[in-house]
Image (cartoon, rainbow, N blue to C red; front, top):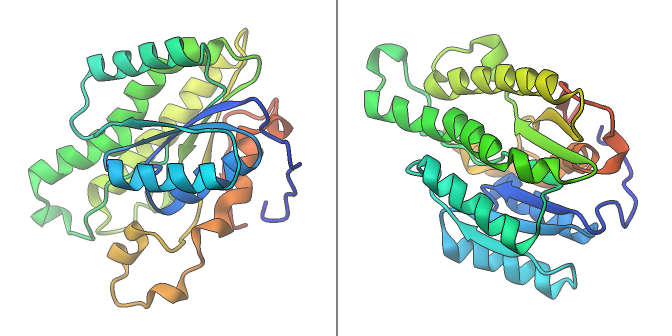
Length: 247
């Protein structure tokens, strides 16, 4: 997948929402999507970070993005419905949805796991992707070729010790993706897949492996080809798959 070469205008006229767009992979993906012609909706909880990436995209001469501040940890069903209403009024449709936002606070044995933290992590990593997707299905259905992309992580498949609620949530997301792909495959223009970005230089990776130097990890840009492929027309017909970005 790293060898995928997208066309310069791959995403021309597409409207794509990216969660967790203020940092890490979300920031890198948002810039690259815009560079290939997409109008990117930047969703995140920190306005300052969203404004920085907004300015970077605008300076690069890409299509003007949009900012939508939202804290997924505390968002209610009404908040998601309000977002859908705003996007309907501003854009009329949605061509892509990338669930990139994540919450991870470090490795902890289950015996010592803080219960409030367990609920918070499940809320951001599992409940929020479901609620957001459900709220935006109508807008995605207005596209002629819509793509929903979740974020996978191999720690869930391996049941790796100490990864706690994060790994449990990622296992749930994998099931959610496959169920949704099966339900939408017939009679809708919506395909549903996941990207496993692998370990790249993000806050999550650095918290999980604090003993290793940041420069040991590849930059987030190492994983971007998979996102471009799944969010663009070249993957039309592909659904229910987990794409390993660094394989």
